Length: 242
Image (tube, rainbow, N blue to C red; front, side):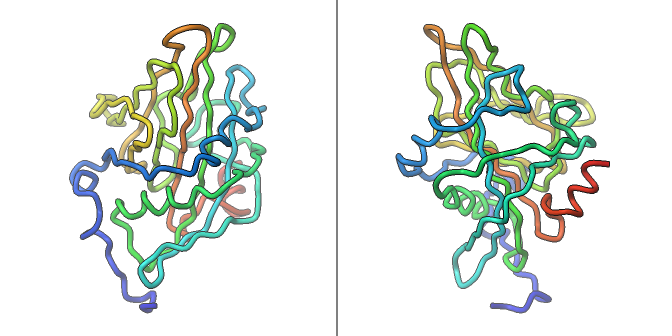
């Protein structure tokens, strides 16, 4: 492997829309049916009982070597997002318990990294959130209770796995200074949006059943940082909890 002192840029392979705009929509690889089915067997998010959300999380380390990506799950820790970015009291600066993903979502991470202008000598820390948001007569389908926000990472990715009997869920990329919506789209199944999280804020509108009493939207939220800037471990937790 090339010495770390010599940086290998990945820009020649990066998505040109991302290089131009700082965001882009891409197609994601199809996932095994067993992984898709696992959305139906997730624990409820007990830190957000005002809405009906089910969630799992696995955190990874990733690196590139000899033409392919390698990933390994990191030891399980509480999920902590800084209150500097997440203003919602139930989430910002709160250590949250997450059960780990059942199955292997790492082909999704590889598909995303292949579209980003990353340097192949860098190691990466990646959060993969598996989320089902349910809308019914009792619960509104609130997909982003914190409102337009940054996640506090270098890259943020929202990928739709399934939309079942829902309308809404429009994803928006927003200028943080003017609050102008620069881009808006309703992602289809197996589509993802890649966002420069240091440059833009993002949001997604609520969902509601299209017909009948219940609908849901299954998504992957993938958060990526270079290892030296990781959102994982004791130092990150001390900083995020201040």
